[in-house]
Amino acid sequence: MLQFLSSYPWRYYLKTFLGKGRTARGVLLVKEDRVSMLSSVGGKLVFSSGLRELKGAPSLTNSSKAGSGANFRKRALVNRFVNHSFEWIFVVDTPDVQIHQIDSLRYGHTGELTSRRVMELVPSVLKADLANWELVNSKLEPIEQDTTPVSILLGLPKSVIKELEGWSRQFQSIVAAILPLGLVLLDQSMALSPTGFHVVLTTNHTVIALTQEGEIRLITRVDPIERLGAAQIDAIIGSFGDTFPEMARHPARFISSDLSGAELVNQAKDFSIPLVSTSHSEFLDLEKIIQGCGVAPIEAFALYRALRLVPPSAYQ
Amino acid sequence: MVAYGFFTSRKERSRQRYRSDKFYRGTFTVIVMVIVAQVFLVAAASALLTAERRIEPETRALELRVTRLASEEEQQAALLRKLKILTSLKPLIEDRIPASRLISKIEEAFFANEQVGLIDLKLSNHFDPNDPNSKDDFTILVTGAIKPTSLLPTVVLTDFTKTLEEKLPKDAKVEIAKNATVQGAEAFAPFELKIHYLSP
Image (cartoon, rainbow over all chains, first blue to last red; front, side):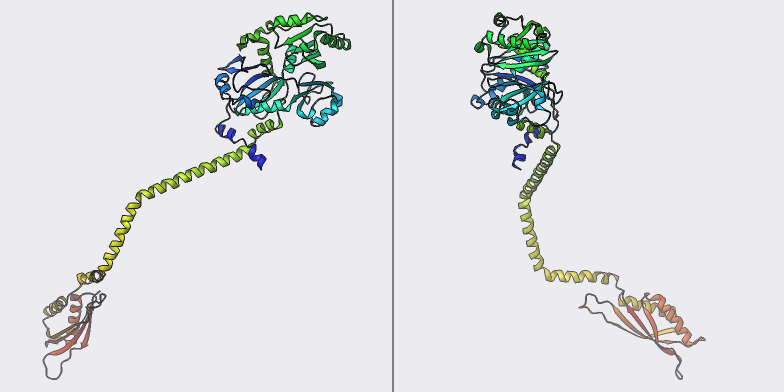
């Protein structure tokens, strides 16, 4: 009874008593050093960056200390109709994101993805109890949709999820998905180069993947390039190349939403294999769609990618 | 495409499921209807209360007036009783056939018949003036005599009785108390009629 009363969405019913209205969506990139947003304003997609400084902006930790969302709403969400029908997609970059490649044969088809199950699948997993877990196939689709030989287990701290959902709840809005930035950038990179190496550089991680025809064959997550060094990453790519020599002939694609084009080229020059640095010039069509993307084009395009990665709600 | 609700908590997913749950929404609709009905009820009750408060002085004044009128009525009870009696007597008085008219009708009957003469007429009325429902109850004793003619006195008396019945009101009953017979050497045949009339 108490659960029934506590979860009773009376405010939502009250607001949608005469009709549910149209559901709108927005994507928020939430990092320790940056918050940016992509959402529709007057029918046009607008990218806004530098929102972290605004009081009430979403945070990965201690959002309660950041104050209420009233100021953020007034400054950043004006004309965006953020209400009970609004869906947020959060793209996050936090050091505690975990990415593990597992064999689908080991996973099987049944069973809930509990922390115990996760520990059975990946014995080396860290803080399994403190994270929520999701499993995707090698095409980054739900595993139920198509069980591919390779599956990817992703972990995100429960505290981060709680913070973001709590932040969204103050606007009565819904959280459609929370996506790790590394996953979104990898998907974007795979769209540009379906076959070959992908090196995704974020503030907290380096995701190295080898794909064939849009399917992941090998994937690993290591420390960021600044901490690990180019040589170490080069060695990992080399070991991947030894496993799949025919795919290793393709140049490796570098992608980062943090580094500028010049910085990315500078990082790439230390590698022994041929590299392609992802540039905003590869997304000329998106430049016309997204207003204000010139400030951080790859970041804006990544948010657009995230918008396309999440299907509409099945509950509506 | 990843699954909808990727990395969202069970609580958040339940929240979304509850939003689209038909039972939950149905419950809400019922609650809203009950609340709206209550609001209407309270509004109606307050309107009634306001109206009652507005008309309260008027009601009090009317009640006072009713009480005063009741006491006045009590004071005038004797008069009212008399008025009631008079009112009940009114149709009796209006529809009454006075004794003088009855007598004149009898006289008319005698005038109409030359062979019959009036000797004596006694009229009594059993009307009770103290009884409001009392009616005129006339008893008239007519003593007369029939002059000697070629016709038999009894036949003349029968004709006279018929004439009398025609003249008198319908409710009057005429009966022959003593038939006309010639006694001894008398030329006239005396007779007696009894007329009874009860006013309707």
